[in-house]
Image (cartoon, rainbow, N blue to C red; front, side, top):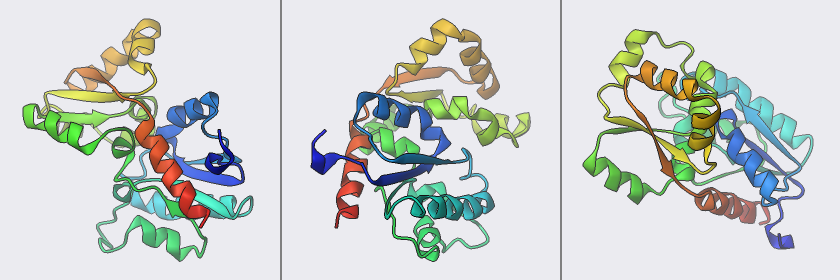
Length: 212
């Protein structure tokens, strides 16, 4: 990695849903940040937890570095009690300088909007990532089967954005996880191969802004 693209001296704050992708970027040598801090998966469902956790993680990051990237999307926080308040407002209120990636959510970090639109013109689908399966208890732990029945079956399939060959790995090692997850959703889970180029670009763009 060139010096200009090095994340050395930077702290990344992101969601536990993105843990596997971040670990892969570290393994590949792309991401050499001083630390990656994770908020709990599913905070988009629990805005009060995001209001508590994100400032905590930013404070922890600020104690280690002045360069902070927040890899959370603008749709990762919404509180119906204060609908005008954004995730960027949460960041600003801390008084900590941080640059957020230009993304809507974890789905948008991994997949091109046009690809999703073209897919959705042909099928009614529910987008997920490996983290949605791995962090199922955190994301869907408060859901009863009734809510699942109301949400998922109106879609033809759950499309898993897979930059890690996760689907094939889990199909070989723990196929029961795939089957159980699909049974719970009452729709098939299908892999969609993607790369992490979009995520890499978003991180690099944010890095450039931290460098001023």
